[in-house]
Figure (cartoon, one colour):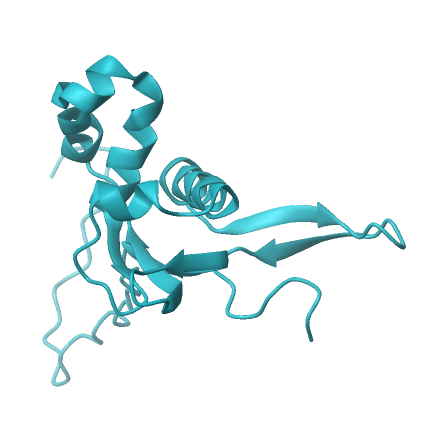
Length: 153
């Protein structure tokens, strides 16, 4: 033993095993990749059926790159959003094969809604929007994925 350093205490055997460390509870967060929505007006198919509800999935890098090779997009850059929206819509009403022709036939207000919805879920990560009541000027948030329509209770 060196001078100036006390000797360590002798080891003692314990009959009981050491107490286990408290178990860590990890709450795994699931990544939400699909978002339901309700269109303001709805897509009217060839039989006259109106399709208002649907599901949009998160876009991948491929979803944003492939339309750039599309001749329709090369001829008219505004067509990019049509092709892109068609790629990420997994369902529109009872239609599960959503293609650019369907997106072309949407009312302009519905296309604008889907473009904004796409931006919100892919860039901002949520479907909420800040709004102001036109009557009382109170600010509040609404969920664009909805279920209910604005102005209805």
